Image (cartoon, rainbow, N blue to C red; front, side, top):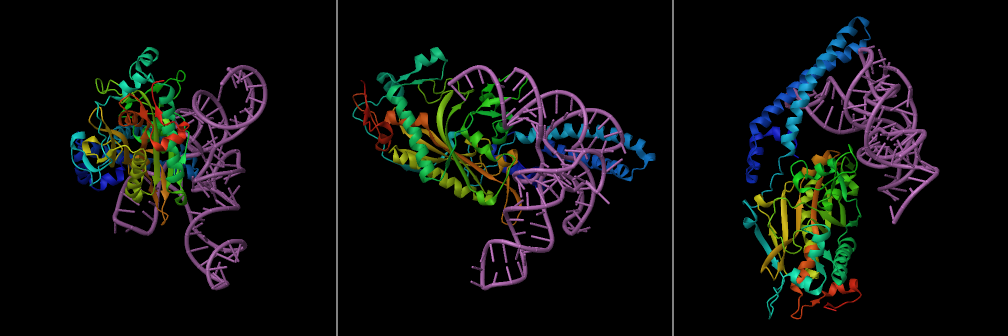
Length: 419
RNA sequence: GGAGAGAUGGCUGAGCGGUUGAAAGCACCGGUCUUGAAAACCGGCAAAGGGGCAACUCUUUCCUGGGUUCGAAUCCCAGUCUCUCCGCCA
């Protein structure tokens, strides 16, 4: 969320900065509400002062008047509240301002490649898709999942289940032992306020699974990513400077409705309602966001390099960036069956955008109160990594070679083949 | 599910109708002392919002939302969360 105080300093600059996002926003309305709001505040405070003085004086002859003032305050307060609500509503739906490095663009086609890694594998046979391979092995079962749960679910079985677990463990080990992240096993439920903090609410409610605990209880949601819960660790906090940066990693299931992606990736496990993801979150001083973003992205690509999977690093254009991000790198892994790169990680700096929503702050060297910078990145999406391994490591006979670094996590298994 | 206890500043913790934005301690910042550090001593130190070029000033805030009162951290009601005991249960 944007700080109204900052916006007010230069409305035009704010409007201009958001041009890249191509949102339709009534800036005049925003301006008008802000003025109205402050006007009401001034009126109310003047009355409050008057009332306070009477109370302090303890002059009984004025008590009746004080009562009258209270009624007046009430009226103005109602009006101010309504204006403020409208103001907040507009404000909470405005996305973050893209950083100047971010290329202008409409959609994913305008993303810009930064670099590439690895050799694209050549096959002397037609490479199969991950779901063919998995089904042939009898270790991916989509039919069973649709029977028990519906579409966009999968049963991962046997050695592929082991592989999935190995991937999670391998990634967690890397991030905790080499990259300085603290491992967290968090709740998978998030409160409404928590979802607001990272920007999933109010705008993207359609994508979230809501959980009903009991009639009339507070709203709860299944986390769409561990980012939500890890970032909110600092919600409502004033963090001590010496405890920065904070770095958290978690491997969790993620739940998404995937509304609006009907007909997209319907086959296979590219796009599911539920998937595992290893997520990194960094909480940093606000001026350290960009160096942290580079660091975090390196942590993600390093996993792919160790798994010897070919990838490319993209910088997202303004039109493809998430709501809370100011700058995002996507890591895309090579998928032979599709003959193209597909997203396997997304690392974003959110500047102070989430921190303002969460009221997450720290005091800098000069004892000034500042909002924190927050970053999140997948390190990596486990389901999609599984896919990438199936496809890139497939053999002619339908078996899968296990990447070297994963073997210690799989009882030194070297390949997965039909029993 | 039943019975209690609690929620106060960055943290711990007093206050239980009016000089309380809030004692005390810790932490933090500045100073004295020291070769330097530590200790000791002295001083400072809440946030949000509004007004002002600024110095500064005003308002709000003691879990949340209502209520009583001229006046609420303090009294009443509802809710949320936490803890203890009993029951049940992975």
